[in-house]
Each structure stands twice: as structure tokens, then as C-alpha cells.
Length: 174
Image (cartoon, rainbow, N blue to C red; front, side, top):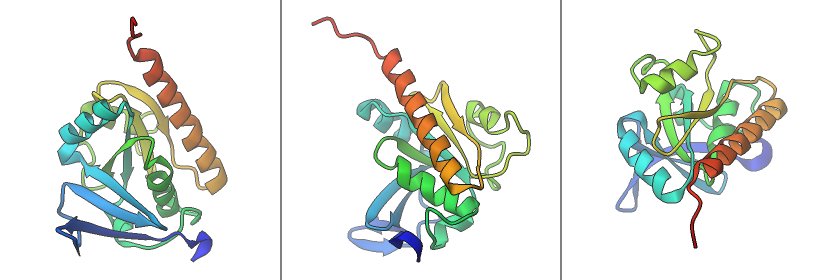
């Protein structure tokens, strides 16, 4: 295990862990971090949380297969990039997970269009940053096989998304 970070998936109910493949919200453990992500079916809850927390939504389109695997955020493939996106965005965004294969063209049209632009048949994972109302794409991150370049692209897009959110917030008149 490289960098001591691995991924496991469970749904926690009453302190017990169960496989979460059918749940609306998933809980992942990467290293010592516990990470929650909404399913696309629970977008309204994600929007409410994002609005309350004043955070962007990070929509991660990948494969559900990755949710049952272990690996590292520096793994040199799409699964490593997915692990990295979950881990890096866990505290500064509200996460939404899409199975890019099973849910292709079945999600929010704004997100579907962003996923398929500029490349119609994109390579997962792809991250779409949205405003809390899920009405505007703030930034996108294409899959980058080089882990270091992928991390830089993710950080840059997150900074861009947060700046756009901050600029859109009404100025308080105190």
C-alpha cells in the first residue's frame, strides 16, 4: 500500500457497516479520512448541504467498480484519480458520485453536457464543479493519467470554483 491510503466502502447504519452499492449516500474510508458522497438520485440533499455550507458541489463521474476496491490516490490509473478526487475534495465540497457507465445520459442535463464536452466520449473519472443550486458549471477536470498533473488540475479547478462562488455571493450591508 503506497502512501498508506486505501479505500473501502460501507454504509453505516446504527454503528454497523453494510455494503453501500444500493444506498443513496456512500461512505468511503481513505486512510484515516471518512468521506461521504451523495448518489445522483439524492441531488436535492446535496444541493441543500452545499447551500447551507456555502460550498461547491463536486460531481465525480467514475465507475462503481472503484468503490469496492482498495488502492492509493497515487495509483497510476483512473481508479487512483477517483480516489484522489474523493480524498482531495472531501472537506471543501459536497461530493456527488455518478456511475459514468450505468448513469450515462441519465443525469442532470447540465452535468451530462459538461461531462461530454469537449470530448463526447470522455475517459472517467471526470469532475464537474457546480454551484450549490446545481444550475451552473464552475469548472471541470478531465482525467489525467499523470497523478501529479491530475492533482494540479484538480486543485486549480477547485480554486476556480471557490472563487466563482465567492464572487457570486451577495455583499452584506452591515
